[in-house]
Length: 354
Image (cartoon, rainbow, N blue to C red; front, side, top):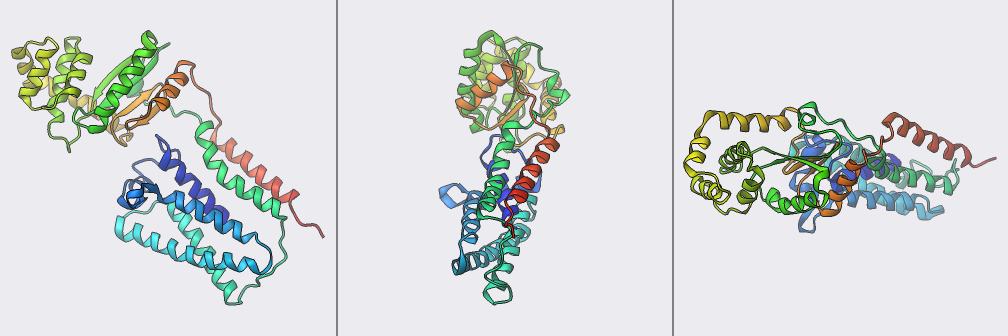
């Protein structure tokens, strides 16, 4: 069970640290738990799964120690089982949802804890004939930890939903961004994305779509102002002005429009027009209807979906992959089959003979 917990912990670490989750989406129980205050250790910001991965690695290492020293693993397993039970209780009572991967990891900890308790009570022999050599157990542990870490780099890129693919042009690095002009992360990300789009020049086809969030009361008006500017071929300039503006109330929107050369009376009429609001609704429904809204900004660079204010290195990597057409990737069944064969080979050739 410790091997299973190692796989689950490693997968959770990947999802917590990656721009886009590889194993559980934001709408899943794992996604809800990942966004809860209990997902990280206080002000340190250390993901809880990273602590779990280190703990299970330590437990697994202790279990390979010879003789009486394995009793340390039993004590550690009992402690881990108590922590696993507590975390399951927190998910069910404190958060109200269960993360499937977390549940697997916590269940593994509980089973290991029960086994450790039996060993300490003398109900299981401390010294048993080990069916595998130590190097085989080490190889299985390395495989358990490394396989989830490897999957994001080899998995096929998911297909872009048709509603988003319709904005893309063949032969271009297509960048489709969903923004909220009052969102602090969108404001932080804007100059980074703008600079990198400029670096790639004419190779890029860029589209900005509006997705005002209900938590930002002034975002909807800003989205309408952006729609009005797009209709006059001044969408990018208006976006710059809106991201720079400290005031997104109607007077602030009119000032932003004047800054980019839009007549204030015309803009005021456009802001109140039913068709403008309808355009915002159509835009915001795209990401919501595809169940891909995990946070803003959400940016599609080719088939790669990036969530949040990504760093320059992540952006350039996505741009470069989109520019070369990307890699086809390895189908999940084939990847799992290769891992299973690898594990089987380790077990067969790592058995203790005699």
